[in-house]
Image (spheres, rainbow, N blue to C red):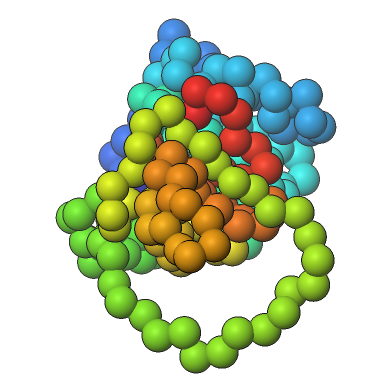
Length: 221
């Protein structure tokens, strides 16, 4: 994660900045997240430009998380303008991934706090496994009824083999393998193109490493 300095500054902070931001650059699109239109604008730029710099007058993490999720694996990196120390962790660790850069004013206390967060972020990244996905065995300790609701079956254009399926879960960083319907039973034949994935609110892992809700899936994803 990079640390950018807001405006031209001749103080000692200049030497600690990965970039000096003077208001515009050819590789950066600035988006103001003041309402849903700002989020829509940012999402439309994903994959079209190197950097999206997000500014928000009243930080809430949900729009930023949506942009971070959309930008994952797209080639577009996300920077967030932060003016309060309380907002640093939310931006740096959004969806356990975080933004790619923090834009900070020339405030020594804020920069000191950002350096601490940067160290925590680097430490976390160094502890992550190098494999794209690591599957571990887990024990089911209890089963409880969740009531009645909609479920999603995902039909594919290719057949699955034994051991294949989708990674699904209610938390973006804790997913379980839902096996495809490749094993027949005495009641129904196998449907090797289908995953009985789960409830509409559940996350699923996409090919580019991002997550989406099952309710958001569309043909071609």
